[in-house]
Length: 312
Image (cartoon, rainbow, N blue to C red; front, side, top):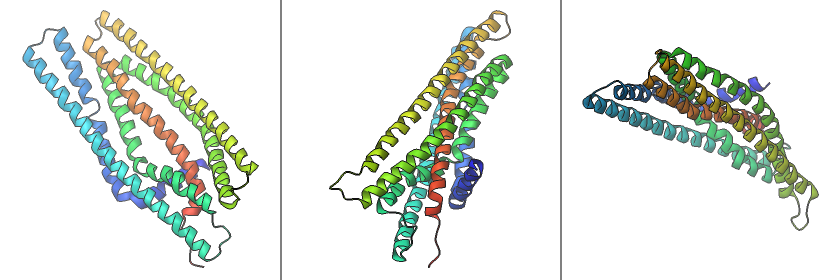
């Protein structure tokens, strides 16, 4: 069911933003392609220091390092701006559709029309969460997975044992994220429903008296949010611990290989930097997976309301 809902979400996104997605994918591929370029210049520069390079050679390597960094930053900035604009356009579309549908239903006295309070909750938080995801739906995983592949590929190409260790760090983190996110999704659905219920009761009720059901919804939302925070922070701590073990492992294994004459200092430093560098894309990929799972839940709850109804 969840996989089917995710496919429906992506089909809807592609139907609305297909042309813009081609531009975002192109920029994402370019960002990923240059991800390992600064590491290569860093590796060569350090080896030139260790093994007696010339100042002129070092200057050119540092210049190349700087240009590679600036190119990467510029491409990421352009990609981020395009992703944000696409997402905001979809937010606008969803809000207009929700509002027009609600007005249409009320004009024809439809029994399934949402209450004003429920409509406000849908138009504000839910529409923004689902719509904003559209800009990142394809480009974000492309750039993050591409960056991981580029950096890990560089490490493997420089020293296979260090590359294997980098892969060993990533695999258990993936399992932790998938398992924890499934539990978070259940809490998200319950929170959205409680918020809708509270908004609907407030809009229909008499504000001169306190509705105990609304207060109970607030307490339910509080406890749900606490459980979500506990799950997210616990998994974050586990990921950080595994990442730390990976850094220590690369430092020890890389140092051992250097002492045995099977590697060089530049490769070890670049590999250690590479492992640190993939923390950003990996963290973003984890965040994207969590966002996609959460949006899938909210999209399922919005899909019927967003659908265009025929005239009655």
